Length: 342
View: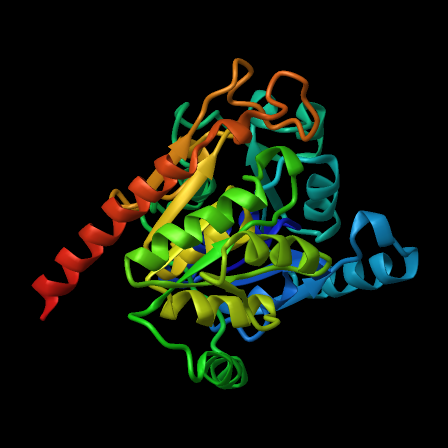
């Protein structure tokens, strides 16, 4: 049996869908995935994935590329397509695959409710308040697969990425390092760069050097963190998504907002301090009980609007002292776990 996963973007969404891929593989299904280019590196050479189809992103849409992707999907002869995104475009791709069954959540559990018209089977709304990983896994129930609660993240292994990260970390002194990730998609979810710099000073007193990670176009943001750190942080070497996975595996701590790097750090089991404001950490935050969440809750929460006057500035209310205290607690738990493992 063959199942197509339709989760087009973003990096965090793709990470949260990886346990669904793992569950299908574990139950003997052959799986394919259609995705937009930005998240492609997380799925290329991914062992449980039988086929990867890349479709142009909405901002760079090209009919010829889209039609070619549709032909490849139909040639895959999928039995089931799972719409894990709840949008018109994801439901349309699921139908274009030619799968005999197109399954997704019912109208009122979708980001674009009317897109349920394109489904063959609508799954009732999952339990309110649950993590999005479990919402994704619940879509496997019509296939006879019960996997809610599992946390398995198949990620590609690239020796080249390992070598690049090892080279980038060569000569880093101190008792391990922390990653500070100040960037991300929504400005309203981000903590001020200057606070990250102050946090680096506190972490240095705990014996940690800080590397400031960044994505394309975020170099100036990373430099602002470094400038505010009085030498306690340095800008990380350039990393691809897969490089960041390997970098996070080696870190003692990752501090980030509700962004792709935070979700990747959780996926590889690195201790995390997550900074939240408008979005809901119970839905898409860390899932390890030991990880720490620092959150100031706006009146509109949970709110997933990129622009909202009610939650504008809420992240400015998160203090450096709060985050440093959370980091100390998380590091203490990690040390205790390490001592038990010896």
